[in-house]
Image (cartoon, rainbow, N blue to C red; front, side):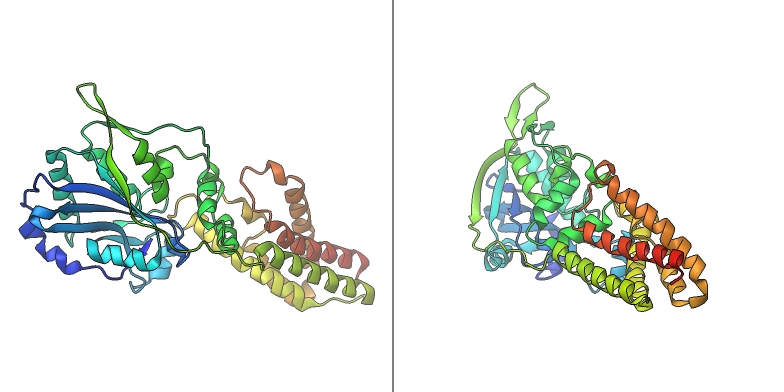
Length: 391
C-alpha cells in the first residue's frame, strides 16, 4: 500500500536509546488514515499508520506497516507465490504530512483514548517491532496488512474488549475490493479473474477493516468494555489533518466489456467469412486458445501453488484453463483433426452449460467475462460444425 520511499530507516538505530524513554503526559497515540487515491494501484485502497506524538520528548514519528521494495530479488515471483514480505518503517511526521499533502489525499487523525501505561505499551512494542530483526512480516492482503496490524495493536493496548458497532451493511470481500477499484474497470476485471469463490464470503465488521477506510470508521464508533464494567469510547478525538484535493479518476471508455464485445464481433465476422468460403483460418484458433490457455495457467498456478488468500476454488477455470494451451498446439497440427474436434465438442458443451447456469455458479462472475466466453464458444461451435461437415 505504500512503496519504499522516503523512509528513515536510520531512525531504527535510535531504538536502543529510546526504548526506555518514558512518554510524557502530553504524549498521544493516534491512528492516521489516508483516503484512497488514484495515483498508483496500491494507493486505490488507502493507507493506515500509527502516530506517536510527544512534544515534551520531541518525538513525532509515524509507524507504517505498508513498506515494500520492488527491487527485492525475485519480487514478482514471490508476489505471485503469495510470499511477499512487507516491512514496518518509521517516518518523521513532517515528511509523512508533506508526502500526502502533495498527493492530495485526505488524512484523518484519530487520537486514541489510552491511559499513560497503555501509551507506553504501544510505544515500547512499536520500537521493538521496528528493529531490523523484527520489522519484516509476511504480507496478506485480506488478513495481515498495513490496516490490520494497527488494528491488532490498538485492540491489545485498549485494556478491555473492543466492541465495534454492528451495521446492517453486508458486503463480501469482493464487494469491498470493487468499491476501491470502481473507477478502474481493468483492475476490477483482473481482480475478479483471479479471485475465487471464497472472496464472495460476507466480511464481518472487523474483517472489513483490512481496508483503511473501514478501519477508520470502525474505530470511530468503537467502545472498550473495561474489566470494571465501564464502556468508554476508543477514540478521544478526531480531526482532519489534510483536506483532500485529488480528483476522483473517471474510468476509460475502453472497458473490458467494450474490448470483449469488439473481440466477439470480430470473431463472429471471421467465422462468418470462414463459413461462406468453406475454409478455416487456423491461426485464429491458435492465437485465441493460446492466450486463454496462458491465462488459465495463471489461474491454475494461483489456485494450486500460490499462498494468496481466496484465489482457490476459482470457477473461471471452466473457461480459462491450461488445457486450452494444449488445444492450441492441436489446432496447429493438421493431422490432429479428430483430437481437435473432441476438444471443441467438450469445450462447446462446457461453455454452454456455464452460460446457462451462470446465475447459479457459487461465485460472483464479472459480466464483462461473457463476451470473451462467447468468443471461445463461437470458435468451438464452428470447430464442431467443421468436423461434422468435413470442412
